[in-house]
Length: 53
Image (cartoon, rainbow, N blue to C red; front, side, top):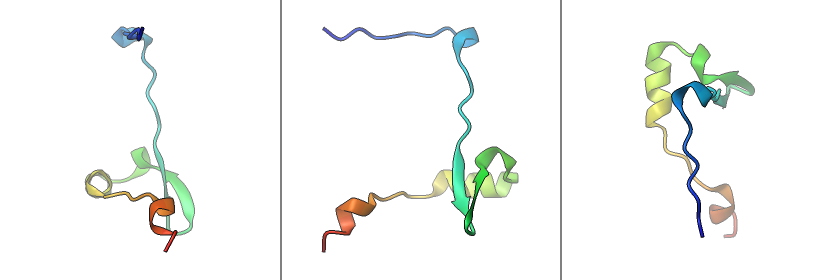
């Protein structure tokens, strides 16, 4: 039995996404619009999947 939780818009909380840039961590919201667009197009990979060679 799986119950689905539905939240109203007023119950939601924004989630801040951080990323590592040039050796330190920054929130994506502090990026300029061009860098935010670039971040949205990035492809991520699973390191453990490729490290077993």
